Length: 227
Image (tube, rainbow, N blue to C red; front, top):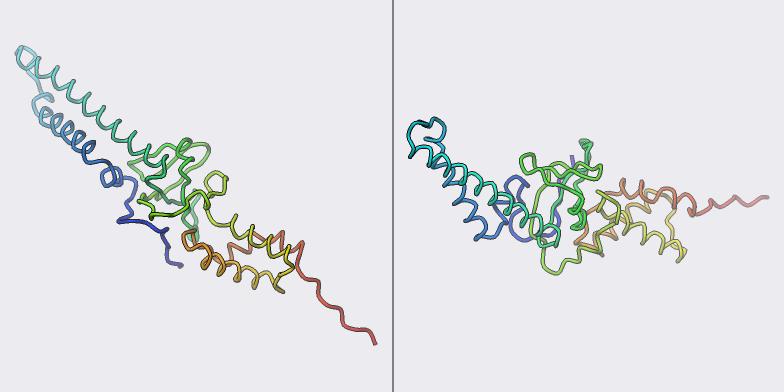
């Protein structure tokens, strides 16, 4: 089974479930944790209040307020986190469902977070007919041109568009290898050398991406000379 290759990044790559705690701003996270602690501190007496005691009733009302503040802090923490994904300050990878044993992870383009909703509990992203599981989040490496590696196809931000473009250039230059397998291996190596920041792509994946175009332009076998 092929080893997973992660895109260039800074620091850790965290599952979506944990990433919100890893990559949120310290000030926002502190406010959230204070709100959670305050709500938890009231839970013991609010679970079994003595409604005949006016002081207990007052505390119960206070508990409702604290829970509301906790929920508000949680919403704000998530909204700020999603804004970072949309701005490209954070990036994410995952597996488009249905997932097979040989599925390759893809990077989720920043603009697709306008369509996707994060499911933090299950480390998934869902929306616009897509479901992406095993979502992990990271800080992209400095200087990486993320726009170059977007295909514009929902949920398929891989590298196929780059090898297709290069193959078309080779067709126009009249440089086509004798077999689809050789051509695909050559393009996979080209991608690794020329675009080290792009997702690696296997020769078999390249074959599927260029098969139709290759068959339309492949070299004609030479006929044996007639005697």
